[in-house]
Image 1 (cartoon, rainbow, N blue to C red):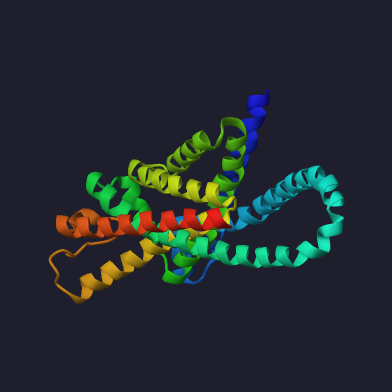
Image 2 (image 1 turned 120 degrees about the vertical axis):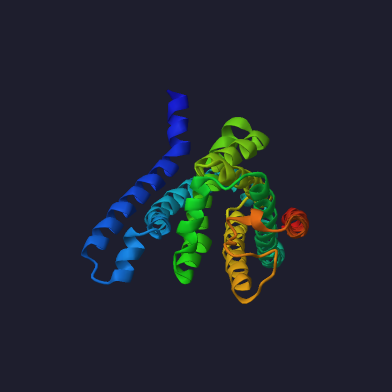
Length: 306
């Protein structure tokens, strides 16, 4: 019974997110039937609808999940503070002397925290470039992966950025690095929870290519969460990776259209990288790896000092 309750607590937010996505799908279909504008009707029921549904589901789920997570966090903080109450009473005499030091430490901590988030975002950008180059050379694009790429990159640019860089990272990190990661840490320790949560993040994406990519990216997301003790760095890393994928795709399509570079032939997209010459792919993968590893190291270094 206890194991069942634990499973419900861990997977409940993910199930709720999926239910919100299903509700969003039903809502989009309903609006599409009554929409008079052909572009809106296509956006809600055509090949672009998948990303819109995902964004709408995230928008529905995030406020509820965030409210629950915040209340749980407050309860944990109150429990910790109760244990420190006696210590605070015993140090009231020196409270005035340490107030200025405390405020200075908070200010320095905030600055370092934002620096850590910046390096986390760079880690996501480098990891996205490296992993996409390597994995899509090793794995032939599957039907599922190709369908996801088509859905994403046919969506209008501003809407695509809003969903993939803002809504999805916020909601997915709240679920995986918030509820699931913390719950797993309580039952199996930090190291196993890092691997298991990253594995679950990979399985959630539903196909082999994306699953391996998400698992490896999930390891980075788990690490920055452990080092910082906060969700924001993981959100920045996730957003950086998604933003890089969108930017690289737009850049590749632009270069393809205005030039006749052999390594960028017709049909190139960021989801179809095997058309790149091997030398080009190796250089880009090495660059991404260098950026990712260096930024990940800097992220750890910064958060160790916060």
